[in-house]
Image (cartoon, rainbow, N blue to C red; front, side, top):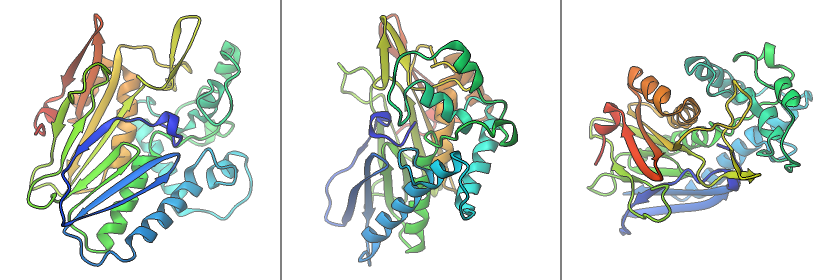
Length: 322
C-alpha cells in the first residue's frame, strides 16, 4: 500500500447515516482522502486545523513522493535532525517484518521503484539481475543499508493511529477515522455501533462482502485491506500486481483479490492491521490463512476460484461480523 492515490483503493465502505449530533471533517492528504466523523462532539473549534497540521507533519516524515520529506532525505543519506517518530516507526516495522517472516518489509523501496510502482515512471519490465541486486536481506537496517525504505504499507494506518491520539487528547470518545481506506473506530455512532462494510472486488456485484462492528467491551477496532484488483499493469497479456514479494523481488501472483484484517481491542493498531493485511496478501491464501489462524488474527480473504469470487474467514473474523 502506498501513499499515492493510484495505489490506495483499499476499498472499505463505512455505512453511516446523517445525524445532527455528528461532526464531519474531510480533506486530502498522502495523495488520497481523509474522512473523520465525530459523534456527540463538544468543543471542536481547533480540530480541523489540528488534524491538517498532524497529517502534514506525518506526510513530511514518511512520503516517498515529496522530494524534501524526511524519508526521501534519509534514503539519499542526507544529514538531518534525528526524528524520534521516524525512528520509532522504522523499528516497529522491523519487528513486524520479523513476525511475518519478511512477507512485509519496508526495505522494499528499491524494488517498488524498479517495478514502476513508486514515484518513478515505469520504463518496462526490470531485468532479473537488477531485481536480484535490490532484494532485501532480512529485516535489519545494517544489511539493507544500500536499499531505499518505503513505508507505504504501514504509513496510512500509522497516520490513523496518530489522529486517534489527537482526538483522544481532546477527550473525544466516539469517532471513526478513515484515511484512504484504513479505518479506526472508537465508541459508537450516536446510540448505535459504527458499521464497517468491506467492498466486493467483483465490480459486477455492489453487495458488500461482509459487515462488521466492534463489541462494547472493546475500546477500538482497526480495519485495513490489501488488494490489487484495481492497481496493476499488464504487459504481453500478463498481469503484474503492485504488491511485491520482498523475498522473491517479483509482484505476487496468486488467486487473492484482497485481504482484510481487523484488530479490535484496548489499543490502536491500524498501522499493524495495514502491514499485516499486506503480509497475508503476499503469503497467499493457504499460507496466509494458516498464519492468521495460528496467530489469532481476524482476517477475511477474498479469492477468485473458477472465475467467481469466494471468501474465507478466520474464526476471529467470524466473531466480529455484524
